[in-house]
Image 1: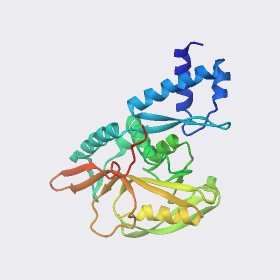
Image 2: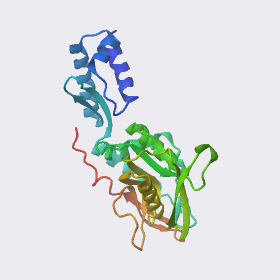
Image 3: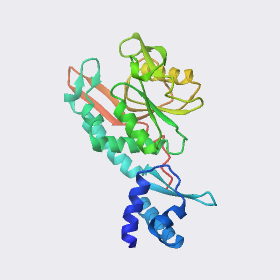
Image 4: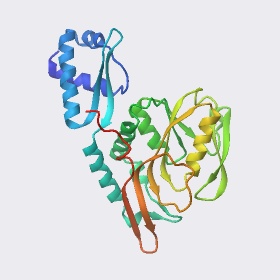
Length: 276
């Protein structure tokens, strides 16, 4: 097999298995090549990914070592995308009753999901995330995208359990958007004890729903390793969630004047991009 063919197949293989350690002898056997040739191939891939700020190829030394691909976006492409995203969110036609915005085109768009998933995976690439959790319904596609890049399970809390999910654990929480007590449930088999959980959602006002998920994680004797939202909006009262990361900060939603003001959130200042 020619080097060009090896590089294409090797790149595809690694990107389909993010955060997975692959031993060098595996590649040597797969391509019928010497370990020295495989090492040279990996050096080319590592340099190319770093040059484009579009991923990290991490080498682990030792008998049990190998190489793994870490999905990781650099600061420049992250800034460029978030500025573009904030600009699109400022479209006044997105305004919905209750101070919400229409985001379904973003949460359902393949390119946006790819970029948002990779951005959040970048922020938590070295946080030992073992599961990504959200609540139905709009956060599901977001959680799946993030979980795919972190190569961990995605779990979904539901407002009403399904027979096919078996026994569940439920919590009551105060919804900031409706000011009513609501309930969310999660199957007892969804999380193992001591799992490090990343909570994600599409939109945050007062943080009531996120706080409900945080309570649910504790009921499983697990740890909340991070909280990340696509959009946060201004909220006059004290939020129930204080430690969080947001990709977009919506400064103003004025339905009467048809004005939406948005800018990149605290993601850029709370992410360590010094990995390349």
